[in-house]
Length: 411
Image (cartoon, rainbow, N blue to C red):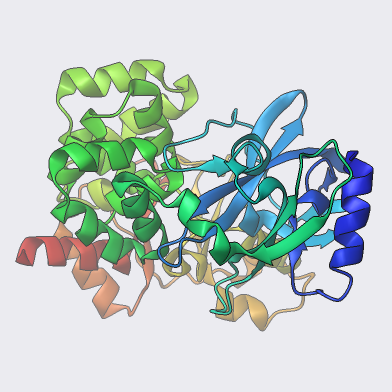
C-alpha cells in the first residue's frame, strides 16, 4: 500500500469524522508565515504524555526551515488547511530541534511501534474539550499486514492501545508539570527528590523550566541551574525575564557565573554586566531594561502597533516611555512617559511627544526598596522609570517587582 493509497483509505473511512485531525494530513505539508509566504515544511509531529487517560497531546511540530530542523509550538499555529500550517505573527525560533526525555515523534516513534493488531498507519487528534487549546490523541488507524500491502484499514479508539505508550515515572512527572500553572508546578518540583528533579530539569523545554525557576527562591534556582549542561543552562537563562536572569546570575558562584557569561552572546553580556553592578535592594537591582520606549516623533498609531506586538507584562505595557535616540537602555535623554489610556483618547496621527505626562516622578538606580515602594504607592503607578545621572532611561521597576520583594522579605 503506497502512502497515497493509504491516505485515500483514511479519507474514505473518516469522511464523516470532521472532529478528528489526522497526523498524515499535517506531515510533509507546507509551513506558512502570517503573510502566506512559504517558510518550509512539516517533517514530524511532537507528542508528549498527557497527565491522564494514557493519551498523548500534540505539543508542536518539527519543521524544515532553511535546511535545518526546528521546533514550532502548537500555540504558534493560527490555521490548518489543505495546503498546510499557517503561523501567527511573531519571530520564529530557528534553534536546532532537540528531542527531550518523554517526548515522542509521530513518524519516528509512534509509526515504528509494532502492535499485534497491525502496523500503525495514522493517529487522529481531537480537542481536549477543556478550552485549553490542546489536541489529544483519540483515534488510531491500523493497516493490517504492513504499510506496503493492500489490506483492511481499521480505525479504533486510542484507548485500545494507549497503554503501550504508558510513560515512565519521569515522563509522568513531566506531563503533570506541563499541565499545572507555573506557580503550582514550582511547588511540585520542590517536593520531588533531588535526583529525579535533576532529570526533570534536563528534560523540560527551556521556556517551561525558565517559568518554573522564576517562581522559586534564587537559592533553589541556582541549585537546579548548576546541574544543567552549560549550553542548556544558557538557553534557560535566555528564556527568563531579564530581571529574574540577573537575580539568578547573582546567586551563582562567581566562577560558574563567568563560565556561563563567557559562552553567551557578547552584546547580551554587556547589558547583563551593566545590571549586575547594582545591589539587589535598590531600584537598579529590581528594574528590568525591557520596556516600550519611543522617540517623541512617533505617532499614537506607532505606539499602539508596538503594544500589539509586545509580550511584556501588563504592568509595563500600560505605560510607554519617551526618550531621544537611541531607545535601547541605556537610552538617549529621558523625556517622560505616557499611559495607554491617554493614547487611546488621542487621534492616531498625534505624536507621543505631545502626550507626555511631566508630573510622573522617576527614580535613581541607587534608590532603596522603600523609596521605590513609596513612589509607586503615592502616585498610584504600576511602573516607574529608573533614570541615571546622565538622564538616560536605564530600566523600569513595576509594582510586581515590589510585591515579589515584599513577599520574599516576609518569608
